[in-house]
Length: 243
Length: 281
Image (tube, rainbow over all chains, first blue to last red; front, side):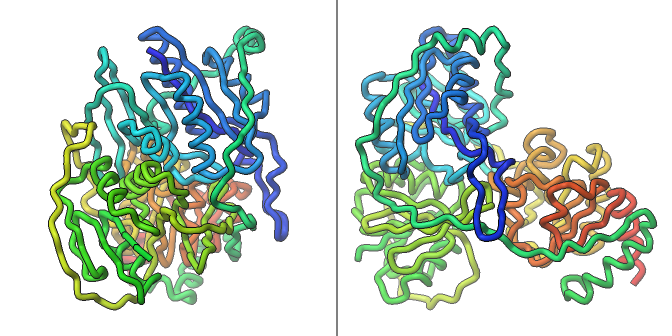
């Protein structure tokens, strides 16, 4: 069983700050939160069914983040360096690599923390003409058959399909492991294949500006809760949001 | 221009129609609508099969809604067509679109050309009803077979249209304590929601109550954030609230910077006092 995990290296969203009219993205890079669950699931499948677990990342190819993915247990990472990217160009670059690898299963996550579109695995599946199971919360694989539980907002679906296919996982599928010091040291010996992008994006990013809604930030001391609630209710009545 | 709109939720078809009042709109859906010139009613919710049908219509512009399933269908179709795609667009004018990025902290402006697939966000719009011609479409089965569908118990609360929302985070302390927030929600006629840790991780509330980037985006008149620290992913889901009230013991929590009124104190006491006061009048 050969599994590919897709992951993206993004600016750490907990460190991004808004200063005036700019968004400070010059913060440490990390593997996008739910993408770690995609990596973890690929490693677990490999551990259970044998074969290889390969990672593919596109965009920022920060070596520290790639080493973390390798230390978690991926056998190899393909790093596609892209200065400018959109879903179209990224999916085409990744599809080229996948055609060479011919994996049984491709795992992405529900969304990345930078663009948060939540559509990449579905786009890639369409491009490759492979079936797709999205928002997967648990999977079992027997032979060529995969059974998955999908987590939609108001319902859960259990579905079945045959490999090869693409899945997207939600964060609840697993708890990503934290590599040991030994694994981190050993990760430097694992192969990283660098690829340069040759597909141009079709959507142009013109600008990114801070999305700020000014809030009043009025602090009410709640040590005497009865008074605090009176105060709050009078504010809320003035605002006309509560009667 | 050949415009095709797909959504499982007719509200999105109305929004799409409002963007293009003078163009012909072909809608594809499992639901009914009056906001399209042609409606192709598909007979099953099979994402791959619907995507293949949409691709077969060779649209110049394919617009989908932004439900989890809508986006998957639109993205699969975009991949089949090898078109570019823009998800969760909040505004389109000409060949420019805006969308929220970096966990709700940024707005990106993008430039695009047709053909393209765009998924749009919900908003309140006026659109004129059209003379809708209907036809039924029988889809082929996709390769993913549905074995079982389980509805999650949410008592049919519609958080996305609620005017008052009482929402709980880890700071509520325990599953048992949620009853205090529930009593408050009932007393003020609000709906009860929760953060991702409460719903998805701890399971203290059903997952259909999850508010945030990967759950529901809400826009009430007033949003009570009880014991919610205010991670970027949660803030992204509540940004459009008119007034945000935070109750938290930590006056340095990120939610404080993003709220209108912050009561620094105990969440349970707050709920009890609120219920007393609003119950009295």
